Length: 222
Image 1 (cartoon, rainbow, N blue to C red):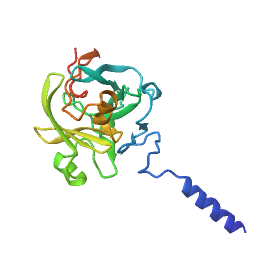
Image 2: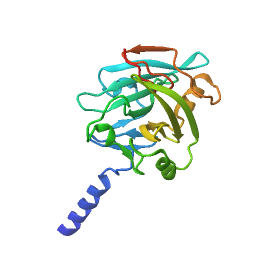
Image 3: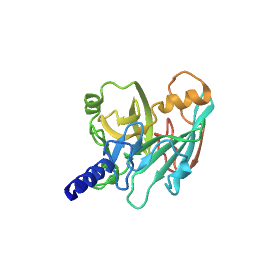
């Protein structure tokens, strides 16, 4: 009877343990789950629910001069990653969280940004060709120019269901990756404006210390 009791308790304990590839968010968790979360930060919540702290900048994303999302950037002290967060104006919920490696700055070994990855291995620092090998061709591809401080960068964006990947076109290295809701930017735009998918222009208004354009991808500090 005692052996049976221990067996039942053991099975219940295993059943209650979180699946590392699920949407269960934990402290010090570095897993990116497409459509669900980046580490402990889950998409689908109001921006104030995350406790990111002091924002670096805020901007609005527009198409045809009409805003449809609010963008925020956060540099989490003292060694936390740089984040870009996007909230849709249809419901004021966050539909995207991206980790960004700023290319105008050197990252120390073991930097937080480099610890996050998907179960397939998509992470900052890998080659764009490896992304395609692991994920297949993206649903949507965007090319644009961004500035990180004084550095001008040609950027490629790959949009997959539930995940965005951005890479430097010069060396084909990924510098930003994160989770979005499965509709992503296109879904938010359609929810707010009812417009078909089009290339996303730069936001019309920016507040804060950094200018971030073209879906929050450009950094031009004052």
